[in-house]
Length: 264
View (tube, rainbow, N blue to C red):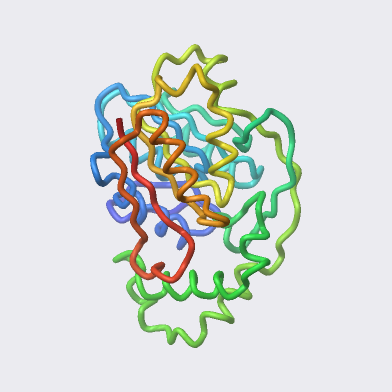
């Protein structure tokens, strides 16, 4: 399936509204000193169909993007976008990122691919949180989907039920940041964007002590379960990332989801 983003950029996707919603979040990642410059190396952990990667390459010249997406159906659209836009600068890994190389079971949501996760317990243990996330999206949609504001939020439960319908398990490969750095002989990563639905700690644990100095900046979606936000902040502080900003997206003030921006 193919659609166009707000500026007419064509994009392969699974769900057209979701592609536009992903595009809506891109500028939200590029705040608080996070920027993309010429010849930067960008890691996109939890790339989905690659909207962030496409936009990153549009921001500056000769940007290289390493995109990680474990779910086969989503990775297929990601590869199509790498072919359409990448010009050889967008490398796709059909793998999740974790603390060790291996395999893991992921829950795939065909009606909401971006929510697919190896940690479904974050929704299963708190079903009300999923409904609240839907409600916040309805209140704060991208400009191209402003019609969503007219849908009464009382329907958020029904919409949430539809989005999780048809969920099923998929076994996917896992890699580590350390393994990719070694295989591709990378001497730097200018920006590492991590949005992997609850696997952010495992991702950080797979960087390897010898590689932290190669990373310039992070933007991480953190699910603050059992004090994880403070753990991540302290880990990055210990690694030299003293410039940190934590914020929640509009409408998610009552959730456990935070964006962490960190630079040296």
